Image 1: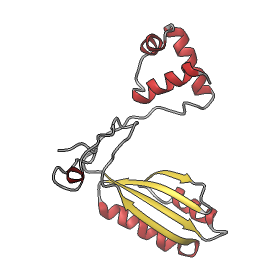
Image 2: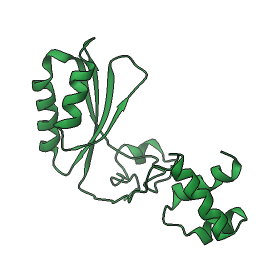
Image 3: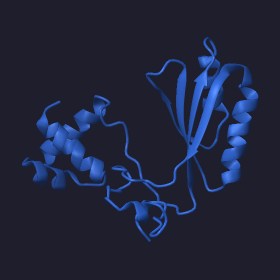
Image 4: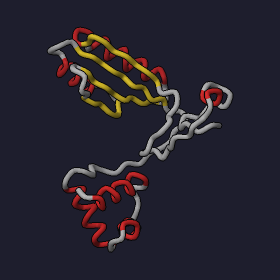
Length: 168
């Protein structure tokens, strides 16, 4: 991968619907050459897909961190991948026996039930489980949210941000 590929990836990260002509113009190549570059990045698995970020004011995002008992990692992982409808992402981290998940719902009760069922059905395999709801999104390059430095009073209530992290 060279600098042109990196520039193309950065362009697509900001707008995956960009035309090959627009990409080519931005990096100084033809539409056909830009298309070949993008197709090569797709074939190599560097570009794995294209998503649409949909903003829903009523969505609640929950981070769930599970540390499994040694020898039970695969059992817990199998359960959370097969039986959890609200989970959008599951990550294996560098911490031993650690699973990090992102769950989303428009109802807090759904997420409470989700964590209750994980605790119940994996009780013999979980050493620790921690859940944290997202209070504010500060930066999300995929969702089009940039970082805006604000004072502590703005972050802590005088100008309460909306769920996208923008002051209301």
